[in-house]
Length: 217
Image (cartoon, rainbow, N blue to C red; front, side):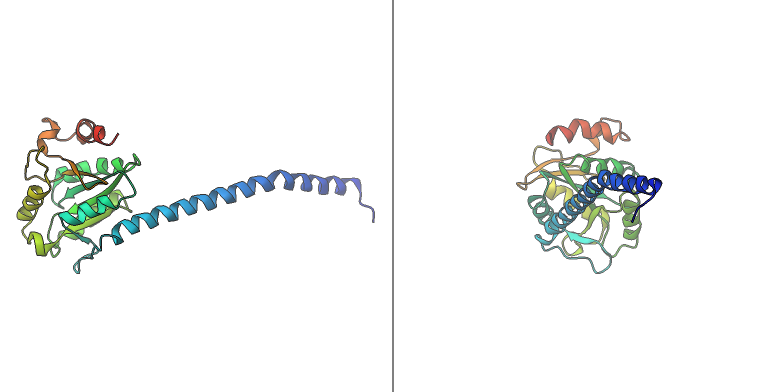
């Protein structure tokens, strides 16, 4: 069977086009598969960090339950060299203001971030704190201090954590919105307080550049 010249040209064009596009589509498919694989590994590692420490969820909320030892365990099992624990209360304006900069730290690729909610497991305001942090970062990891260890009064809970988590080379100050830096050996490298802002309490970027970033380079 003979084909007219126009049809032959069209067929040849399609054959040539397939030869050109097939490697491109194959490469795209491979890149997509690689991306999905890396994403799966990342999520699996993150889940593994938590499961290795046998953390339990609070009955009153969707939050995991933390204490100091759990924080150390998470840092030791991290897939990143460092872990930042950021303390936050729902009503704390500076905590909310500085939280986006805590999220940015995780983008360095060297830090895992966990938010530590200091209000009681049963506190009705806890849901406001959770909704806030998820509005900034949907995939943020977070937990609440254990009522059985820290009690239910927010001020006492925060002070107890500050006392037990602050290393000797840092001044222990009972404030909120702390950046707690722990390395993979479980060593607490630094715990920030309001004095680290050097009277510029709104500028957490500058504080982090001076106090935290030099320790994770």
